[in-house]
Each structure stands twice: as C-alpha cells, then as structure tokens.
Image (cartoon, rainbow, N blue to C red; front, side, top):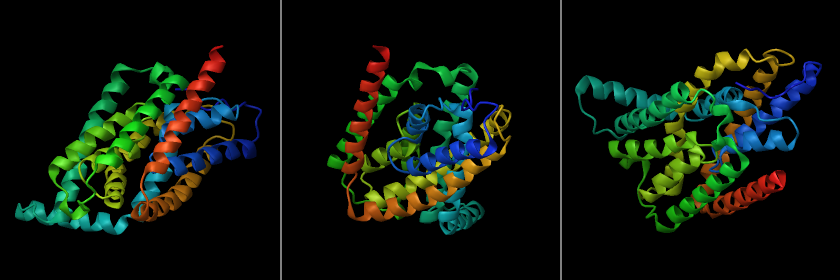
Amino acid sequence: MVAVPVEQSLGVVEACWRYGVLGVVQGLTEFLPISSTAHLKVVPVLLGWGDPGVSVTAVIQLGSIAAVIGFFRRDLQQVARAMGAALRQRRWQEPDARLGLAILLGTLPILVAGLGIKLLVPDFDHSPLRSLTSIGVVSIVMALLLGLAEQLGARRRALDAVRVRDGWLVGFAQALALVPGVSRSGSTLTAALLDGWNRADAARFSFLLGIPAITIAGLVELKDAFEQPLAGGALPLLVGIASSALVSWLAIAWLLRFLQQHSTWWFVGYRLFFGMGLILWAGRLAG
C-alpha cells in the first residue's frame, strides 16, 4: 500500500497538519453524497502531497464511524434491544428489529465485493479506477442518477416502514461505493430515494447502514496503515482520525437538518462541476 509521501525529514507538526487536513476532508465528504474516496485522492494531490492510498483513507474513516456511532447511539441501542427481543420471540414485526435486520443483510454485498477486491486485485491502489478521469466520469454518472432519483422519488416512506428488501436494495447500492467516485452515501441515498423514501430518513438509513461496512474496512486496513513509514509514527494518523470524528459529527447533524427542508439538487450540481473539473484537469496533465 502507498501512504501519503511524507518525507522522512518532515517534522511531526507538519505530518500531523497534513493528516489533520485529510481528516477534515474525510469528515466533510463521508456523509455528504459527494464521495470521500474521490476527495481524499484529489485534495492531497492538489496540495502536492500525493495519493494517500486505500489503507490510510480507510483508517481515517474510523473517525467518521466513531462520530456516526456516537450520534446515533440511542437508535443503535433501540435496534439492539429490538433484535434481541425478536430473536427470543421469533417475531420481527417491530420496526427497530426490521431495521437491524435490514442493516445486517444490507452489509453483506459490500463485504463480499470488498473481500473479492482484496483477494483478487491486490494492487487496487494503482487501479485505473482511481485515475482522475475515471473518478470524474463516475462522479458525473452518479450525479445524474441522484438527479433522477430526486425527480422520480415519491418521498413518502419513513424509516419505521423499513423492510428486509430495503436492506438488500440499498446494500447493493452501497457496494458500488468500492468504485472511487461513486460515494457510499450518494449511492445509498440515490437507491433509497428511488425506493420512495423521504430525504431525511433515506439519509438516516444510509448513515446507519454504513456503520458495519466502514468499521470493518477501517479495521482490516489498520495494520497496513500503521506500518507505513510516516514521519511522527502513528501520531499523524491519530490526528487524522480525531479531526475526521469531529467534522463528521458536524456534517451528519447539518445534513439531516438540510434534507428536511431542501432537495439534493445542490449535491447534483456540485458533483457535475467536480467531475467535469477532474476530466479537464486530467486532460491538461495528459497533454
């Protein structure tokens, strides 16, 4: 795996600054439908730091998962209690029990796909899918799909009406996020909107569904990331995780309030602009 190319002579303070910036980028983009993977590649490259690589970005995501667990701790407690009762009584009519089952089943597609990539594509860090052109094209495609979902979605369903099939549907959409530029929150929000969910509850389910997937991805890459030759040792990564957690908490709170009163067209426009900018930039570099 390739970490951010921090020179060995670089001081601890500068290394912490760089990873702190990556944490802020991660926190801002993980839960907004604009692709954290794409921004964690593009922003450091623009700043002249290089591509941080899959391992480092996955570990910094642990800050985001700490934030989402803390933010939705009461929801998670209710889901855990409801699932425990459902297992004992073998009755899954309770909305929180169905939500927990949907989260578990919806996590399976991305686990299977992620394991396949880990085993079959060991050099995924350098895959053509992580090129600027590819990320730009994917960003535009996903923007158009989100716009389609915004236009066609009924926006009538609430979280208490969740069904097991919702877990599968949104879970398969989440698996698409393994392609850089797709955006996990963007693909799941798009699928949920097309399935008739209201915007705020679609985002809420997207956040809850992401907890197992992001946690597992971060833990799997933890060992590789901390073995990277970073100036300052593990401290820069810890700073990145901390800044990611703080900014993620603020982003979650903001997005839930925003989607209660606004549409996703702002994100559609941003992703179109971002994608076209990347394609033009890649063209200039190639020329």
